Image 1: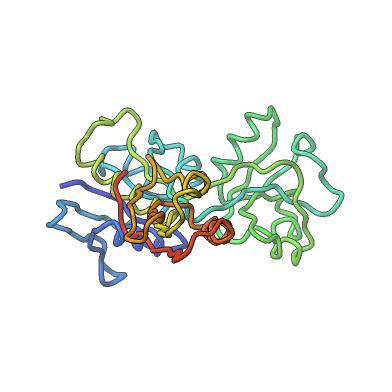
Image 2: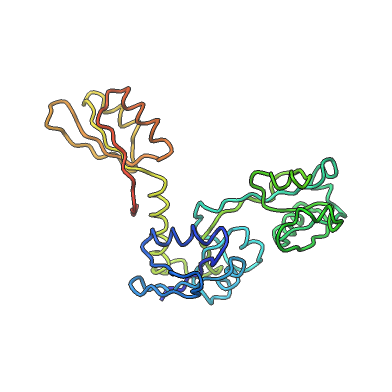
Amino acid sequence: MLRIAVPNKGSLSGPASAMLHEAGYSQRKESKELVHVDPDNEVEFFYLRPKDIAIYVAQGRLDIGITGEDLLIDSGASAETILPLGFARSTFRFAAKPGAVASVEDLAGRTIATSYEGIVGKHLAEQGVDASVVHLDGAVETAIELGVADAIADVVETGTSLRNAGLEVFGDPIMKSEAVVIRRAGADGEDPKVQQFLRRLQGVLVARTYVMMDYDCRAEHLDAAVALTPGLEGPTISPLHSEGWVAVRAMVLAKEAQRIMDDLYALGARAILTTAIHACRL
């Protein structure tokens, strides 16, 4: 069986299990379950702490895993990303009291508090900055106020928590992260079971990104309509019973669907419909 690590809690857990379910894999019914076997797909899922997944995969205990790119880098484990998954996106930034630190270079000789010392240490080394890094679990916003550090490095979404703590970000982002599928560095990239798993997840990603669009248009407007809906390899075009009309079907980006519908209608197309895609293989 293919052995796969899945986050057991946190912001990665729910979306990861939902994606796996969409990909046709059964998932655990109780959060207390640590192992779930899907015999129909010959897969065994192990629900682990997100921070530990990269270590298990790097040691070859598990074939592949789903975790955060930030957690992979922070672990320092010998594992690599093989597929970004598009959820749990985050940005890591430095922050300090207003006016206290203007750039990353100003951190030289100072102390930085973070829950991700692996990421911060790697970034400082790349920038040639010699600073001390203090590891703190949980919220680090109070570290400066309590005199533990001169600056912090943490995930920043809206920045509200930082502002409430009297802090502001400075410098460029340390990194941007998202959920990823990982495997042991140097593992066989042609393993058919792994490739099938990746194709399923890629199918989910495409299904979430695209919709199927159908519409009718006059034959003389077909070239202009196809320019708006080129599809992947090309749209499907069929003649209608009414002379001079054709039916067109193509995949379009979901985020652009409404604009395309407006443009098609202005072109004279009618009966314009969009349909969700639940699964696909490209």
